[in-house]
Length: 211
Image (cartoon, rainbow, N blue to C red; front, side, top):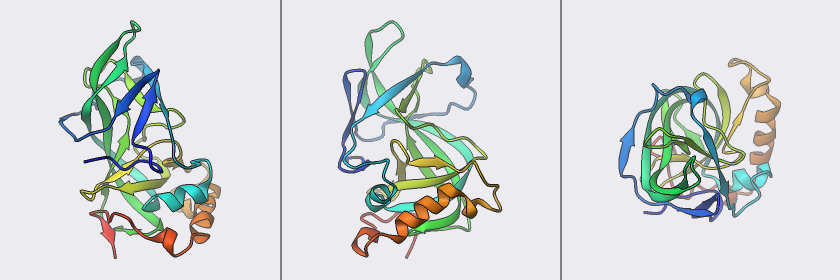
């Protein structure tokens, strides 16, 4: 089953090697690892849309919403891809996806449940051997306790995927109670308001979606 990414992109490039996306195989938690001690490699993404254009981005995704990260749950790994090692060589390793629990605060495009935290997955994370992090260039892993505007794709199995730049945009100028007054939130809310009826359609419904 193919993974739905930003636009029509089905692969990303890292240091000259192609990372092909496939089905989930193994899982591993990484909450005991000290991130400051582990190197991070940037993944160069090939987008099918202008991810720096809020309207283009929200038109492409299935769900846009404001939420707060409550938990980093685990890391899962997809089909083996060539990843560069500290010694300059490449090694076949599973591509990391980091799983989180997020409480939806406000729905912007289409509706997700707000009465309990939802599961969401971010493309990128710690490698299976804990030797490095792989993160899409311009993106970052989520931080527990932080508020973001999320732009997510629903997958065929109902899960939600964040992939690439501006898939999760930090809300830094307002607190939890006033998050909707943030300049960042207003930018994406205004972008959603400009969408046509066709652009608001959910291509794949999330398991936590609301009709």
